[in-house]
Image 1 (cartoon, chains in turn orange, cyan):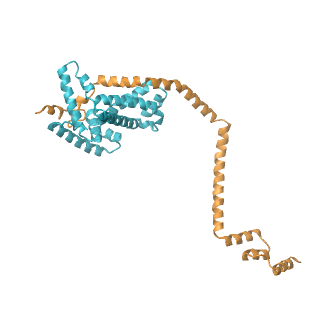
Image 2 (cartoon, one colour):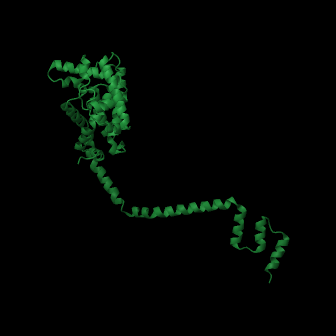
Length: 144
Length: 185
């Protein structure tokens, strides 16, 4: 049996298989002294915090009161309005993107929607300017 | 019902001394075990804990999850302890365990025996890895349960059991064989 056997195999707080580390353990009084020393060392910081705490509370209260004022009302109104505007903008962009993907179809749809006279829609569909014959035809169609 | 950590942190932010003292009482055992695992010296672990608690109070607004104050604090403790260990390595000092001396009371022979035990344990613990030291100190010194240690270290209960088993086996082997000089770090 060696001296080291004193340090092993004894019951410790970790159960019957625990290694006895009690030689490293501070006594309850020492632990209490350490706790007190830590709190004492923190005294200046605790005092500083205690001094500024009322000012922080006052600022928080002021912010809470401001939260019920006209600015808060505007904010509550503005947020859903902005959201609706954003949705409309997104839908518009999507519509434009689809239209620009097929210019011919888009032009045809636009011409149809504007209900232009037949010669004018023909020029647009064929992507050309009116010829003299087209102008004569147009004038004749307008005559009673 | 005792206040939870989030409430104690909130009150400590406002400078409530009692709340801070409650945080110290609650978290000092685990913090001390972590510091001791890194430094290997009870007196150094005391210094590290004091420094870390005060530092934690000064930057308490940086604790984003007050309900997990313990984990945040232990990280500060670990970093401070590593800094101290590096400083000690650069400037070696004579090791004297104040805690072991004080615990010996007025009997010089008992104090000497206790100091020898402490030195032997410290040397044997020094041969383990840092995590293994933390596990064995948290369990066998501070009396924390496997579940609590797993939560502290962010691992599973099973992993803690395995680490504890291996750490104890290695520790016993070192103590029985006698730890060779210079094997502490």
